[in-house]
Image 1 (cartoon, rainbow, N blue to C red):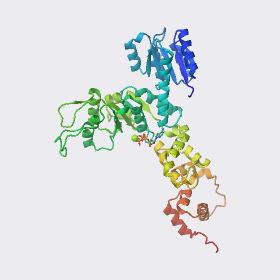
Image 2: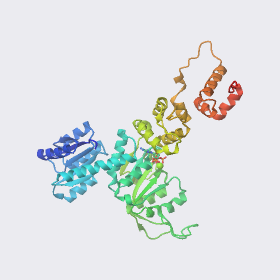
Image 3: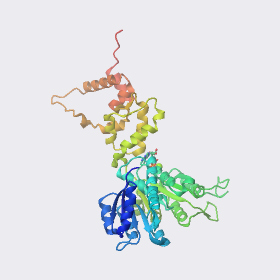
Image 4: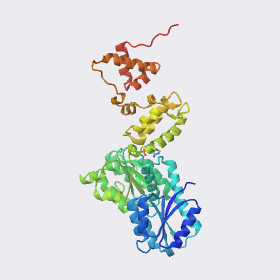
Amino acid sequence: MTRNKILVVDDEANQRQIYKLILEDDGHEVTTAQSGEQALRFASEAGFDLVLTDYKMTGMDGLTLLGELLKQDPSLIVIMMTAHGSVESVKEALRGGAFDYLEKPIDRDQLLKAVESALSRLRSIDDEIKGDSDEMERVKKMILKVAGSSSTVLIRGESGVGKELVARAIHRASPRVGQIFQAVNCAAINENLLESELFGHEKGSFTGAHTQKKGQFEIADRGTLFLDEIGDLNIAMQAKLLRTLQEKEVLRVGGSRPIKVDVRVIAATNRDLEAMVKDSRFREDLYYRLNIIPITIPPLRNRRDDIVNLIDYFIAKHSHNSQRHIKGLTASARNLIMNYSWPGNVRQLESAIERAMLLCEGDMIDVEDLPVEIRQEGTPAAAFNFKLPPEGISFEDLEHSLITQAMEQTNWNITRAAKLLGLSFRTLQYRLEKFGIKRPVKEP
Ligand SMILES: Nc1ncnc2c1ncn2[C@@H]1O[C@H](COP(=O)(O)OP(=O)(O)OP(=O)(O)O)[C@@H](O)[C@H]1O
Ligand SMILES: [Mg+2]
């Protein structure tokens, strides 16, 4: 088991000692704090995997501490320990963002079980979502924390960062796991049909409505509904969605009676919703209703530590498609990948790796197997360090020489030579003809 860093907060010295001994005995690294104030200081100085805090303490109480800790790091996992099961305080703590609670007196087994349950659920999210940069570790802890409740979650991030992957992970870590996960891309459905798609319709409610139809909210009843590209909803649909979220009921198109639904909504967007609210293109009230728990997935170029993990994962994932056993990447290919800007994020990385595995002729993916945009961005002209001599050069001779070298290096494979030169197949073919460059005929 991996060693985890746990912060124990209690104003009673002997309690602190007991918890510390039990947890250390189980292999964890434990720091203790005697007050909320001290805990806050420790937490800001060091990263903890988990905080275990007493609820009633002199000075700052557990609930205030929880709020302050979450201000520093909303993903922090906090387990609250409450005396004599005061139900209300427990509820309050969970609403305030605690992950779990323990009722005093707490025995050794209960304590270890609660801690192990939090940490093992975190590890199972690790299996689905690759990358252990600080940014992704925070995202994973957020997934674990929001999974327990039915609150609406808003996932933000550029295209291809893994928004749907995170939405599915939330569903799988939640009590709704045995129920359906339904995904709807709001941008992909015609505006006129979206209302019926989401909320259903009654027979004859519009031309073409030959039968009664359940909408996605009804289909997802008791499960999770993933509303992708939420920023693309028009104003009328925004109002209807808001009403559904507030009332927890849907009205089918042409229907007269609302239908109760129990759906957890996870929304996603790569748009700037705040700017849209400012321009009155997105309802402010819906924005606040959706944004109860925001999770932002940073672009891949801002968490390059994850790239190595992801490459290994994608090579393993796609190895069944490949004829040969791909061991990894050459140093220069890896270098290009590490320095590329990845505008299409993880999805683009995955397809680059998948493609390279198909093109690769050895057991290591090399520069020539990578898509042209990656090769070009990674090797700007300046990198060649070619200095034009004062007496000038013959551009045609240089071109001729580069093309010949590329053809020789690739054993006269036009496709691969074109890739080396950053040219299209047809451009290279044209130039080969223009210069009359031909493969030398071997002497018999
Ligand atoms: N951290 C990750 N670990 C493993 N696979 C990942 C990770 N992030 C993304 N992927 C994979 O990358 C692809 C794109 O992810 P996903 O569809 O979740 O992105 P998205 O943010 O929803 O994109 P879009 O905005 O284009 O809809 C998927 O195949 C997904 O499984
Ligand atoms: Mg998506």
